[in-house]
Image (cartoon, rainbow, N blue to C red; front, side):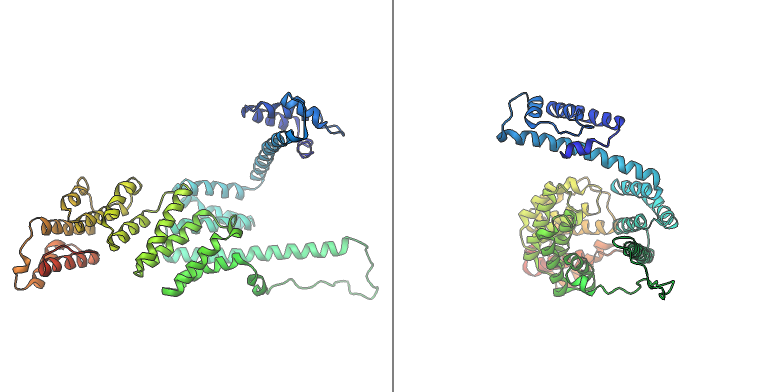
Length: 446
């Protein structure tokens, strides 16, 4: 019986801890099962199932009801497994400072603590010094992910760190190869029938360790290697080739064999990247499909959507002339955008959606209470107020003999003396203003 095999090697103190854990669960049947199995822990015979069932459930045993006992055994096994795992981790942490440091760094990372930046480099150097290459590599990977999310280093520093990671990976492979070669040599000599070497054989028949490894065949039959390669290729391509790589990544991520190998978040990110590239490439109908798929998956996995993706979603709805749908997204996602740089971008886009529906008052209402804006956002706000004026006061730009010059002058008034990167918004304003000047009506789309 597996449960008894798990209980046999435990010390009295450890058994007491498991009893306390089971009691905390307040599952009476589990408490009774453990009580009965303890009696057989150091005995050679096994308990009778019918008798054990009677003790645990207080009912007569039948084969049809045996699943009840199996279920309780499964639950008890899980409690013991958890104890053994945590006990092992505690023991290893006490022996290995680099393991302790790595778990601490992981905790910093999970909680987005700034202490990660302060401590991670020291942790990595300590692991390298102690030849704890496994721990060093995991921390290199963690530091690289952190650098991709938080602006804590220059591009040159991040790339230098990734190259360090690569060198440490080579060192780890070297160490592993030598350990494997040692084991092959050991078992070759010490297992099975030991044949004496010929008298005229040399005293040293050692061979040099392997230094050149061809991964061609291994990679050819490894789908996960292809998945990782594709993640590199999407950043070394653009246009149609990039879109094909992204589609292949998504297909691999959705395959049954990838269920445990690829994290849920990675699957969603791949879809989001594809949606963004389609959006930037002007393929807005296709982008819409993937944007919505990504948002549904974020909800399914109970993950908060990235603010940048919400911005793209609203913008894409406006481009597709779905102004009502775009405006309706603001109240849904506003709370998720708080303290995000995307907050005012989404607010502006929502304002444009209202303006394009000829609802200038609604557009102005959402700007209330948003006075703290960056330089570019002030200019964007001025554009919106200009749109508002165009729809409510209807200045006679069409009567101007030089509307092109009038528009240019108006844009100068909007930007003032500010230095900004708001050309897209000024371009939008010009398009809108020209249409007012030449057609006397609001622009139909972005």
